[in-house]
Image (tube, rainbow, N blue to C red; front, side, top):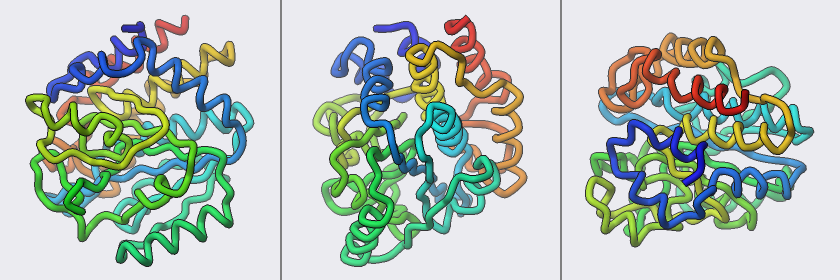
Length: 279
C-alpha cells in the first residue's frame, strides 16, 4: 500500500482497510492520473443526510471543495451538484465562481430526465462523487445503520449511470462508487450487508471521505509539482462554517465541530501528514 493510502486509512473503524487489497496498491495515485487524463469540465457531487438530525453532515463538503479548488488551479472548469438538503451547507464553503446545481429529490423517471438534460447542457468530461449515498440493489438509499434515507436523498446516481468517466470516494460502503466492490463489502464485517451498487470508473476508499479527497489532492499535487492541499486553517474554517449553518457530526448526529466522530485536532492529523508527505 502506498504512503497516501496508509495516511487516509489510519483511524479506520468501519473496515475500509479490508477493501484496499482489492484495489491497486497505489490506488489514489492511479485515480489522480485518471483525473488528469480527463481534464476539462468536471462536476463534483457531495452531501449526506443524517436522519437523526435532519441535517447534512460535516464529512463530504470540505473534501469536495478541496478537490474543486485544486482542479481549478490545474485549469479544470469546476461545478458542483447536490440536493436541497445539502445546498446551503455546500454553498457556504464553495469558492466564488464555482456554480452549484440543485438536483431535485424526485422520482427515478424525473431524475433520469434531469440527469440527461444536465449532462447535455454541462457536457462534463469527468464526474466525481465524495460522500454521497448510492442506491442499493433493492432501490433504497441507506445510512451506515441501514436506515432508509431515500426520501431525503436526490437520485444523483443517474448522472453516473449516464457518464462514462467517473470517480467515487467513500468511507462506508453505502456511497456512490462502492458498487465496484459491492460483493466484497457485503461479505466484510462492519460494512453494510446491502451496500450501494452504483459503480464508478475508479474508486478511493478512506477512513473518512474528506481524507480521501485530501489524498486525491495530494496525488494531484505530486503530479503537478506543487502543493494544492488546503491549509489546516482552511479545513477548520470549513467545518466550523458548516456547523454554524446546522451541519452535524455524522457519527453522533450532534451539531458540533466533529467529522465522523473525530475532533478538529484529531481530524487535522491526516491533512498534517499529507502536507509533510509533500514536503
